[in-house]
Length: 339
Image (cartoon, rainbow, N blue to C red):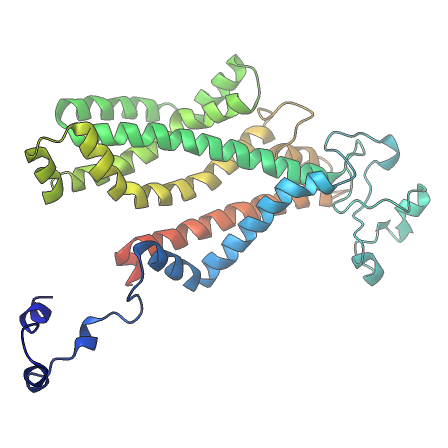
């Protein structure tokens, strides 16, 4: 940069003689691009990240619209259509997912040739396709709400501890150590047993200890940034701690917050599925991916599709969030981007 400034006063002939070339100081890849556009370009340059983002969008769209377009509800019981195999239009003409079991057309046998159950039905005759996407919607809702609570609590706690330091930081970190010394599962089980089961209770159970990792990351960033010149200048000019935290430190930690958020969502989805699997999930007849897996694994040997369908959606959902978080980390962090 100094070399470029030193030659600004030279004539064109003098620049030619000293071998100055203005193009050498221009980054052709990102010239004229804003920081946000640079992140987006880097993000979509990663094929795995782009594919994971597409998968996430498809899953979210199905979770929103598939239950609305389905002729069945997630809690509709039909004793006539229990444990029906998968039957999908077009694919049935190819001899796959045609509603047959051991060579017998189960739909014709029960006189329901006009019905289609894309993921089959469970032992109560409920349509698994509708239940899977309703369960995906509930799992995503619980995970996002829980992680938003994690962000609010963790960012506030971490910024206060890192900015003020000293005894305040020491006391706050000891409280975290006490909290992390108690197993998460015990805290969640006690809370779920003490309160009425439901989405708010599960969100609170997931958030009660989930914010610790976020607070530690934010605290580390604030400790690193608070000694920078622009923070010292703001203090010298009489800026209040609130202004410094909100105007200077928070924007500069936003990248780490976004990355941690993206990695926290699949963790919350998995934990919610685990709680539902052990019977601490949303109350019946509501369904989440964990409750569907819990219902399906009992008959997995006879009707494997009942557990494979929700398990496949859960796996793709978690993998997509992890790949997207990894891509965001590479795009936001300049050091990772240059590697």
